[in-house]
Amino acid sequence: MKPLVDAHCHLDLYPDWESLAEECEANRVYTLAVTTTPRAWPKNNEVFASKKYVRAALGLHPQLVGEHWREFDLWERYLSDARYVGEVGVDAGPRFYRSLERQKDVFERILQACAQAGGKILTVHSVRSASIVLDMIEEHLPKDRGAVIMHWFTGTQSEARRAVELGCYFSVNEQMLRSANGAKLVRLVPIDRLLTETDGPFVQANGAPLRPIDVRRLHPALAAAIAVKADELPQLISKNLKALLA
Ligand code: MN
View (cartoon, protein in one colour):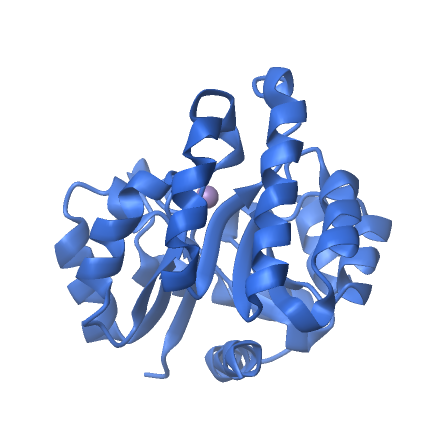
């Protein structure tokens, strides 16, 4: 079996996360383990440092920024140890609207710090805020200063085209392909910008959280959406990951 790619999974939110990392190793699932607060970074980084297939990302989740914005300083302190950054971004949905200005401020500072450091790869949340997020990326993170993966993108088609122009990758999950809009978006993204993700444990199937190996569940639908053979998909996605990391 070819290696798989789960470009966005909250490994540390599973009770058995350390054995889950072993599962990724055994099944050869390249997994980006995102964190929601920088407090989680040291342990994640330490546990995954010895792994071949799992990497930790340094995050400050937009849904937590309202309460945790003071942790930006901690996030910044760890940045030099991190190649991957996430989960970061903006959430303008009704539950988090109150902290929108704070979220924008924190995300701007994250982008600026990444641009200054150079070479970071970010996995970005943009719920109800695709245009805001893309404006900020365009202004603060030039293409040659970092790479962006739009995670579970739910913007409009013109916003998706703009993200493509800005050089963004897209990590697609199974929930996204269940919606007509999601499937449409996937078709207008160039094939060489597509990655796969589970967003576990938030995305579930049959009442259980998806695990990184379950990323293969979306292959048939993704392959159909972009008109390639399902058995060619793992190779295509691995190739995109390699290009992103190069
Ligand atoms: Mn997530």
